[in-house]
Amino acid sequence: PPAAVDMVVLEEKPIDRTSEFIAQIRSQRSATIQPEVDGVITRIFVKPGDRVSRGTPLIQINADKQQAAVLSTEANRAGTDADVAYWREQVKRLEALVEAGAISKQEFDQAQNSLRTAEARLAALDAQVREGHVQLQYYRVVAPQDGVVGDIILRVGDRVTSSTVITTIDDNSALEADIMVPLDRSPDLRVGLPVQMLDSQGNVTATNPISFVSPRVDDRTQTVLVKAWLRNAPAALRTQQFSRARIVWSTTPGLTVPITAVTRVSGRH
Image 1 (cartoon, rainbow, N blue to C red):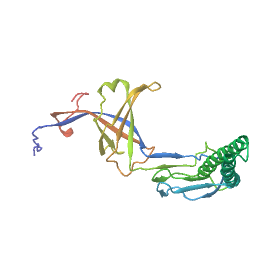
Image 2 (cartoon, one colour):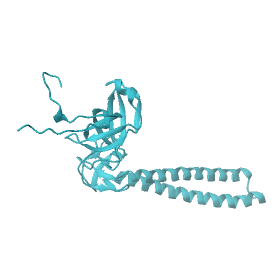
Image 3 (cartoon, helix red, strand yellow):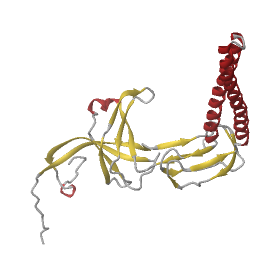
Image 4 (cartoon, rainbow, N blue to C red):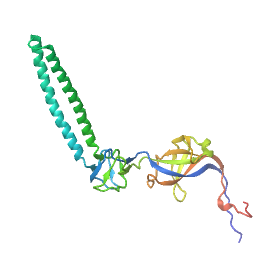
């Protein structure tokens, strides 16, 4: 019997003009945790993968030396405070005597100078005590933001410095896609162009507009950095992940033909 033929009426449909790139996923709220003081770790309060809030303690660094320095400064302050109180009483007492002519003006001036000197030392020690207490807080490293704790390779007993990376904290609820676009396509770039995130099969998982176009060209790769804030981000995306992304340059109406209706003969359709 003759083969059946299906008839299809061609209609105009939106046709996207696109280019596909590799995007790197970054968190808009990502922090690398480093201590502000040197010392030996005495306690680790969290483990990799923990979700923490801002201010949550992460590690404790041995603060005995700093604590001793603060106590010593506070002791010096207490002695100077007593000196100030003494010279204030002396100045008050001598003021009445100098008015009565019982002592010389020089003796009164010397007492005043001693009071001013003691007050200056007290002010300096007050500042040192405040600075010491602030410095003491740095020995407990806390989370600067909400997020998930990354890997921690340090252990109790390890010595850290201000250049030591303790861990990272990432908030995957605020992701963006970084795309490096070749220079020859840069004239077509503009904020608002749709960016389609693709899965491994090429299916669109989310669409977000371009939120930033760099005014500079990367001199090493001759590409332009484009960012898309992923308001609609697939749950599978993670910080530092590479993913397929497609920029939609324009959408115009056109006719599409089913692939099964096209026959290729001698390299031609």
